[in-house]
Figure 1 (cartoon, rainbow, N blue to C red):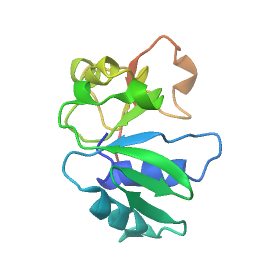
Figure 2: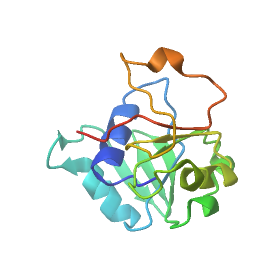
Figure 3: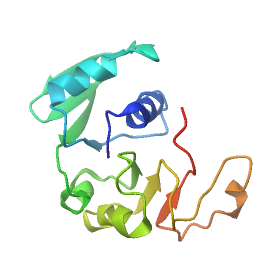
Figure 4: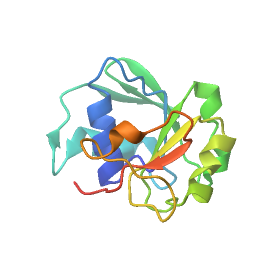
Length: 147
């Protein structure tokens, strides 16, 4: 969620490179799919995306993989379960409390990772405390959105 801000875009670009990550849907209420494809392809900080990007209605096709594109402002209205989304990266900078981020669970997501510091969600940092993560945690923060 919040795909085409700085954090959402780099998470997407990195995840699409990993065969063990299956991106099935994205959400950004402020960007049309054609502009999203352009922003993904031409990133002023990280350079041009080397893969293939196409737009087909409300879908992005990236390297041959179809990804559903949603434009919902309320995370509770994003039908994550319809696409099989399990994890949601919340990178809008708006839904940074546990209560607000849990709205994604109403749409069928199972876990939410907030890409910014949170006032109340447990925070985990690789190499610092990631070993204390428990699988029953539904909403967590990666503690910083620093790029």
